[in-house]
Image (cartoon, rainbow, N blue to C red; front, side, top):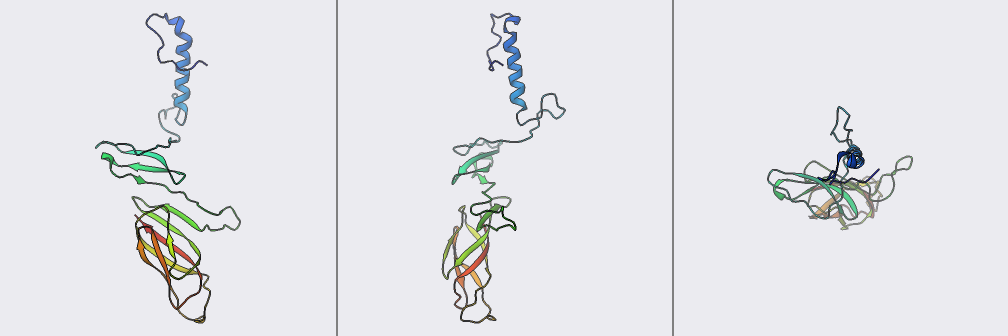
Length: 199
């Protein structure tokens, strides 16, 4: 099949002379349109079956009556963004779901770091800090301003305080996307689960 040619027919050509290229143009248009769309002969013609986005190098400009969905690369991951009207600050819509480890094992192995997103500008984090120590600084990614951090000691390892002593872990010194781990009653190294929400 010939390549698409937008200059056919020319004013000096007879119809029969340009017929092969006109036919090739129609075939090319049908082929390209059918990619990720319902076909031209379908009663759902024009509807998307899938949306593929080419990653952008920068945020698009939007007018007062426009919004935009697009992708760009953040820390080597291609993620989806929503750009509000009037070129307001874009909102990242997706995050890498898996950053370390594997979840293909049977039974599943829960990963050390995971994150997803909430509607709007919120980022929801969860994970396990293996071998957390008193006063350890934890930095969550992607970067955000933390609104809440909840900690729970996982598989408590008793120290000198005895097995019935009430012990807790809490997050202190929240600053942008970091916090410090604090234990009560002089705990030794512990595995700590966390849930956090940032904006």
